[in-house]
Image 1 (cartoon, rainbow, N blue to C red):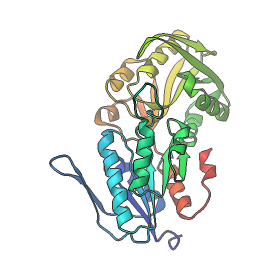
Image 2 (cartoon, one colour):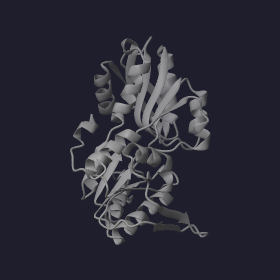
Image 3 (spheres, one colour):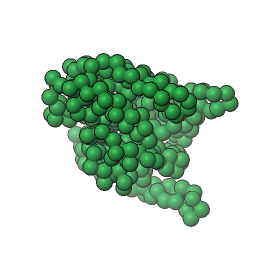
Amino acid sequence: MRQVIDDLKIFAGNSNAPLAREISHYLKVPLGEALVETFSDGESKVEVKENVRGGDVFVIQSTCAPGNDNLMEMLLMLDAFKRASAKRITAVMPYFGYARQDRKVAPRVPISAKLVADLITTAGASRILTMDLHSGQIQGFFNIPVDNLYATPVLLQYLKRHLNRNEVTIVSPDAGGVERARDFATRLNVSLAIIDKRRSGPNVVAEMNIIGEVKGQTAILLDDMVDTAGTLTMAAEALKREGAKRILGCCTHPVLSGPAIRKINESSLEELIVTNSIPLRAEAAKCKKIKVLSVAHLIGEAIRRTHMEKSVTSLFV
């Protein structure tokens, strides 16, 4: 095994250092030495401290908050490795920022996800490894290979150990997440419910109707990310009114910006199960309702198989 991975190089930006260390431990490959700093005027500075010529380089960096800074660090690192003559450079982005801006929703607005895809490719990435893209079609924004992993195996394993599946209903908080929720419910062999939102204006939900039976059930609200937690907590209250016995949230990316933690603490949510694709901020880390699961072994195995030119298909299920 050691001979096979001799030219495997793993580097981490500032946003995912703890996750990168876990991945490094899983692969038994030391983290590469790279200096990622910020000048006093706010400019990012990157310097690779070891030889990567001819190496298979994996750069681990989520473009989470501060999104622009982390994105710039990623671009500079990719460019540094390209100029250092790395054989192949894979951008490992557990959380792909700007993914929600994947289409024109009004006149004269950018498609930011496409722009970010172009920037990453131009900077030097040979391929992309990411997890639970907000929209699957973003894979088509790249002209290089993209592997979009799913955190489903990690989340399912936890739920199977801790819940009585005879009393569980998976709930999609909106129509856009039905496919994800249906797949999750099928793998767990439980029932499915959908929340139909009616808006009275922008960012104002006037009414929530639940399609499906949740009375007396453990309702699990499933989404790819939780940002301000507005939809999640309102959905939890609607489920409580309909007689749900327990209400849990489940997501891959804990963005948790703005008033998210306050809303979660004040809500009927018993627990919010997330992954470490994004490191929790200090306030979120103190929240007793949040349970963090590690995806290090999943990403680490994808890196190992990519390096050894083996299929990663089994990791998608």
